[in-house]
Image (spheres, rainbow, N blue to C red):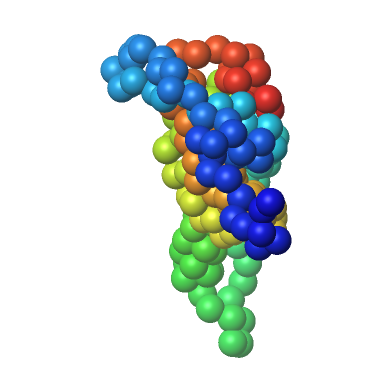
Length: 192
């Protein structure tokens, strides 16, 4: 008879609660080393990759639109200020033009740089490819805070995306995607 405080049996002793193991490997393709396929991974974060990718595409499009708006202000506002008369306590129009062009240019840079990165990484993420590009885009997306418009969503997406992209099962899913495995097979493998 078992003692009331016995330890549970080890995984190799038929423990029904032990995680499934797989020793199958997938041959290397496209310069990627052999990938050891994990057992079924129900409940893993692989199911979050597609929503993160879609959110990155939407975020990138919004950042790009806002960056273009700020870039247009770099040209339009200094031209409007050129006709403004200088007065007491107001800087001369040339100084104000330069100052506003620099401020709007910095604000535009965040959206113009982060927007295309997010879109490219999101499209790649839909196919479980280029995980490092996705991580770079998520971090660079924080620069879009300079557009002011996209700051809250960029911060939230960076946190959600980095949690998802740093998960070991997601890393394995991206390794399969980079090896050429179709996205449907990856989702089926991880039950995402």
